[in-house]
Length: 234
Image 1 (cartoon, rainbow, N blue to C red):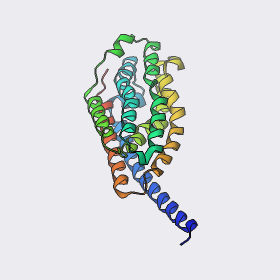
Image 2: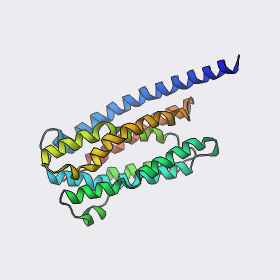
Image 3: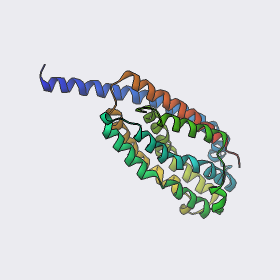
Image 4: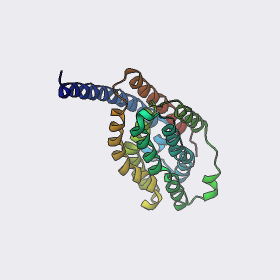
């Protein structure tokens, strides 16, 4: 077998593995989306009963998870060995890109009439506590490649639902776009992050054990994220 043939075989196996994982992640996402739509908060949003107090409760409860995002990514990067330096670099760059996003969320809260001290001092709800503990535990494991599944769920939420939620909330509340920058920004930019996601998958696949871990991590993260939204009450 020539070098070119061997390389082509590797590329084929990699493409097959990535496609298979993406299909399974798509199933996990569909289940997640269904759970989200059934939560009291999102039902109020989609049925036109969303109030300012609901929006403030949403921002308050989301803030810490957003703040934690760059932290668990940084920890995950530090847990990756030298054989996967490219993935480590990608995670570190992603963490840098997002580490100030919670400030954007705070501005939205204040712009929509909330007091900064209220959102800064708020405690996590049960779902947020569980999600945060899960993410940091996973990030502390050696080569935590499964967290790519968590990224798929969270980035997918941004690219698929954030802008939709932002526009629905704006129409219902009648506030200026400046009060929804966090949601609208992620709706525009997380789609690009999803393209980067497939490249990250290629850095760790094909590997059956890693593929299974990625899908499992996505499903657990989706369940805990939905719990976080379910626990939000104005």
